[in-house]
Image 1 (spheres, helix red, strand yellow):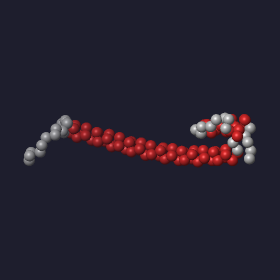
Image 2: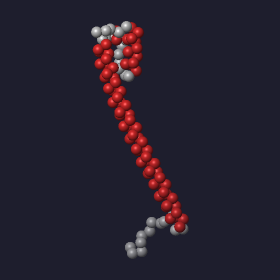
Image 3: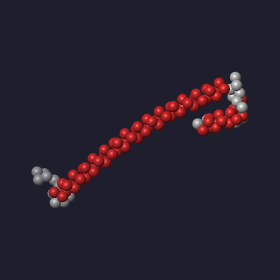
Length: 101
């Protein structure tokens, strides 16, 4: 099994640190390529999972904005219709009981 040179250890440490893996430089020179390969594979799996989750959340946000836009348009149409009814009826409709009460 191959040990990493100090320059390679710094590079691997930089990559692993970037992905949130807490490692110190002094441990990397003693890591084997097999250990690093397993860690990198684990990080790739985590990254793939996070990418899938981000895409799912993005789709959910898009769908919610479409719903919000639709509801906003509905409210605007109802507001316009209410304005038309109020103008046609001579003012705001009063909440009175029908004559049969």
